[in-house]
Image 1: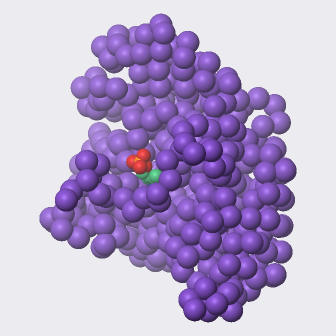
Image 2: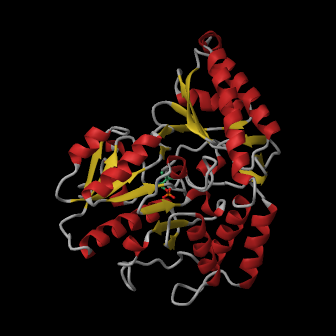
Image 3: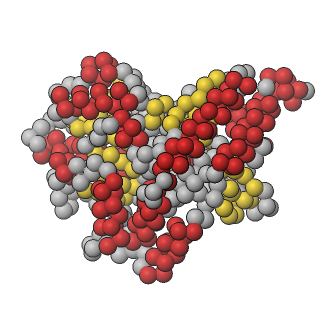
Length: 398
Ligand SMILES: *Cc1c(COP(=O)(O)O)cnc(C)c1O
């Protein structure tokens, strides 16, 4: 019989009742160290006092008014994001896929408004993930996700990741721009090389194309900079953010330069919920924490320490792990046994971790994770690895 919740997810049989920092607690009192952070989203962990207070205070004042009126909380958040990034203007929405859809609309609109309505195609990369709406399924280009949903939306071409020659060869007369994740998340924690990001910028300038970055997973502090592209010392024309932007409250954003944003005049795009006072109160609270002196440096420091410990884990358990990947606190361990088996072993040890493409175990803890919690996670990972050793797997099978 069909369950009340549509069965689109293979859920673990765990229900969390509350959370404290990097920990989640089930109804029956079992504690789990959360290195999944609700898929890289609970950026400030659970129950962060500043975020909780901001949401409670705003909920008591006014939650929603629509974009037919001024929203001071949204104006403030947009000004702050502009102050901290390349962007000149921001559009708020409610999810990552919605932000990416809007970003592609901005790219197409700018091309058309600049006298090239024939330019509507966007070049994307193999291994990408851009969301589950019809157009973003096409941008993602994963045949498995497209299966059964009719003809893919036209306008997306795919080339191998980190390969400039392939990218340049795919540019045609209808190309409007390029869409890329600085670190592919779902695809297996695969960072773009910093040189590749700079080359993409130069290529867009050379051909008059727009560069769109999907920083939904890599952004909002995850790599130790507010946005991952800052490591490459380049800037995009337009960028999407979501996941960690409001610490678990649903929110997305499109950040754009004036060149791109100025064509989005009244009536060209919209959202009923987008940027409502409640979401923006959450977003402001998150940004206040992240932009406080030392916060991002601490994320970088914690990430480097974890990386060093994970390298040691790979050396200690070569039959289970073969490689460390990622940057900052978006880290991956390539697994030898199936990643599902490793995730189950982690769960048995009290650690929440998630999967990613290429048989990678994804570790994306809340950005507030403490050193002692990283040490605990490493111990849990080592015990999980021992559960997965081929000899133990054989014993377990008997
Ligand atoms: C999660 C994710 C999306 C989709 O976000 P939703 O909020 O699930 O729609 C898009 N791009 C990237 C890189 C993501 O990690």
